[in-house]
Image (cartoon, rainbow, N blue to C red):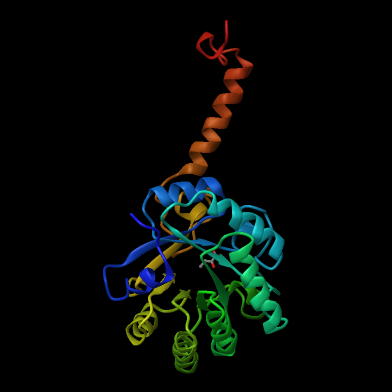
Length: 264
Ligand code: KIV
């Protein structure tokens, strides 16, 4: 199988839905690539899942470069899209293009993702004109948590119309795909049908072209954190705790290491 590209992802529009996942390091990328997922996202949610921050706002360019480079060492055929972190693209368009370019040039990312609606269209157009493929992200945009909280977006007719207009503006600007986060399923389906680029839903229902889940959520690494939109496909949190407890117990009881683990 040859490497996935933005053009190939775009061509999945209207075909069977496809799964995508956030990955944060070499190991998670290796697993996702081996599972055959075409599109991986180095999400700035790593601020919470990997670094223990309260939100994505603490994530910097240096952090994203570091984690994206690790992910790129784990992928062969998947393409990997790196999140532009908070303040890396809001201050000026010049800085934004430079930072997006750094994720491609220094970390090897295949594309970047940034949050925001029609107001980001000129910036996305400029990135695309300079050879930087972009995924848009609308609906619940976690970098605006201080403004909008972690609330479902697009619930009123006006808010729904704005989300749809934002989606069309990002497509017109040249985005090759669009993340729709936390919005009513009917609206996400309507937006998906109105676009020629794939929508990637998270908490946006089954009508999207693709789904994305955060790696730690789908593997159940945090058993007590289960928002409505998450399905846990494994219970790695519980299994990890049990394994570590058993290991500690066996060392204490001199059961580990056994003779089979020792050099003579
Ligand atoms: O950072 C992230 O994990 C994301 C996904 C939730 C889309 O942006």
